[in-house]
Amino acid sequence: MMPQPRTLKISEIFFSIQGEGLRQGEPTIFIRFAGCNLKCSFCDTKFAWQGGRPYTAAQVVEKVRRLRDRFPARWVCLTGGEPLLQNLRQLVRLLKKEKLKIQVETNAIYYKPLPFDWITVSPKPRAYAFAPEYRKLATEVKLVVTRDLRFKTIKRLRQAFPAKTPLLLQPQSNLRWSRKLALKLLNESLAAGLENIRLSLQVHKILGLR
Ligand code: SF4
Image (cartoon, rainbow, N blue to C red; front, side, top):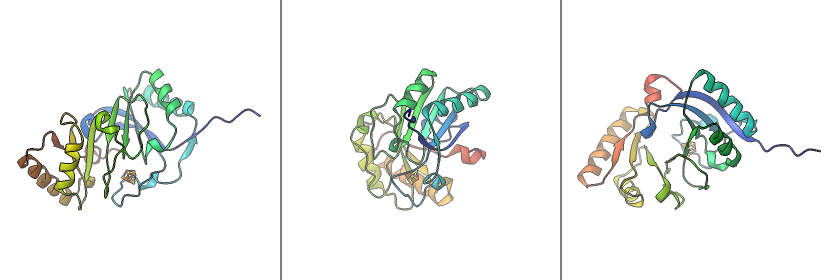
């Protein structure tokens, strides 16, 4: 019997505008992986914790190609859930062959040496842990402004990454209390002389996109 090709568990594949972080506003095809090693209470993609449809890497690329015919995009974003729980090697190779740029959004507990073009590192409470490789490799660090986020955590993370790596404070689901807290924490960070800290609103939610 022929060996079955390995499959990936995918929650959804769709075209939208990247709403978060420094790639904000760019047309992007999102590949959302099912499953996560964390269970954050504030997670806005809880539907992706379970389930997912099996796809081979080739089937994912076929779907991406079809979307791209309708919505030309230069970027794909591997998101979740936690994409790095799955074996992405073949998919990344095929997406590169399609001349797509690849962003990965990760909670940063796991590191895999894959040729991503953009690595969004988003450590999560309470530990805000991350694999040490990301100190050098993160393109941006994104922190969700939860009720428990404190200045000392921002300071610790700011010191853990080079100053050239932007650190983004992202209000939780654009909620009013979180926007206020984000501004307070930004002011505190500026007053303390922390460099390269920015606000990041979730523009896709403001625009009513996915
Ligand atoms: S790490 Fe991200 S996807 Fe996983 S539970 Fe937390 S917010 Fe949700």
